Image (tube, rainbow, N blue to C red; front, side, top):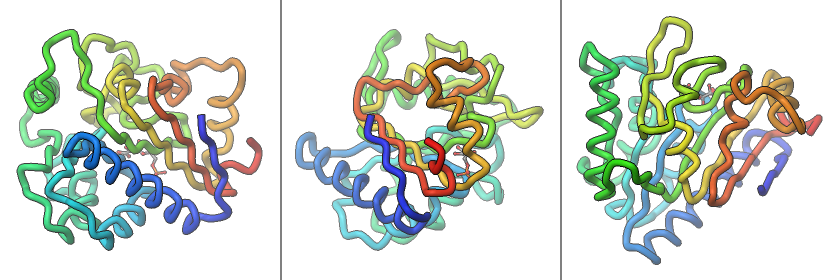
Length: 236
Ligand SMILES: O=C(O)[C@H](O)[C@@H](O)[C@H](O)[C@H](O)COP(=O)(O)O
């Protein structure tokens, strides 16, 4: 499990961009396309801004989101809005390559099922199979959550779906499930800030309750990267 503590956020951003570009180019070379799931929150935004400066075969890249707040796409809280403004609006990527989570209905459960069906159709993957994205970017909250898999929530127990409803208090979200995340070929955590240290200590301890620290549940078959800045990773 490659783990790197980078001196500061800028160095982390540059390292993350280097690793992501490498894997996008490799996937396109080997399979003619690359599939990536984006994280929300604040940490990835400068990474997306840097990716927008790269000159890659964007028409061969397919964009998904590992989670999404259940708000309209033009809402300030929308992960889709953040990624479009920081990256996707700046590059020539076909709209058909962008696969946002549906959040415009009144029924998150129904939208979760609809998005799962769309993902299964994209990957030509039947019920009972779990598709593998090439790259999955994840953040981690100071409570140890990742994507929208929050501590002690029902979403952590969902094993027979790709997409489920996550709850942060009374705000609803859509999220990849643990089994779907763990099918990723390259899962990359991007964690910055001293406020993440207590949760990281639990996540990297030999024993802690994964229900309380959901990021512990992410143990993919493929690559698992943890990139920290010095503030977050100092005590690891
Ligand atoms: O929708 C979201 O908010 C994210 O998917 C969430 O899981 C995020 O990655 C963590 O909360 C870390 O957020 P920061 O990067 O802002 O610390």
